[in-house]
Image (cartoon, rainbow, N blue to C red; front, side, top):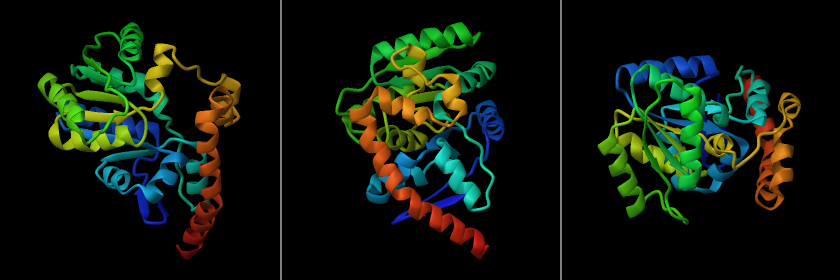
Length: 251
């Protein structure tokens, strides 16, 4: 499913979790790197006016739908996508890395979060090797000297998987650069997945997730940060819905 908004055009090219994990397993087994992005409405809103973010997304090999509005928009356009939250991919991706005998790197918002997440992953994923835990300073420039140094460290360690949790659009821009500089490493932008594992953020209760209301839980926990983000996303949804339905009729 391709989404177009303003100058932005991005395609969700992996329709569900099972096919994503199959693709990642094959790439890990053959030493082929990748960049994985998890598309949500916030990303679509940012893509409208951020040319560097658009270039980074265009360089990604794998894009999944992370957000119920993306899934609903796809269905309006006659396409069947499944929800694949980035925060729920951390453990399955690490299991694949462990099965392939490939170490993992974690680049998190803080080193404490990275260490706690690594400990949680070690308890859940037998045989997992975490080769690198790092946290860039703030503000972090994904095209700057600090990013260069981080990617040099990743290249030296040679992990099969590098989990990025430094926020959009920084993590996607770093992933696109890492894809070129470390061609045997898979870079996965997993958003709040590391903070959830570290216990720094709480996921919505299962009932709220089942009711597709996780966004409300997160907004209530962090209204100043996430309230404006969700509002901006809501404002672009009517136009996206009209384009999706028009594309379905044209097809």
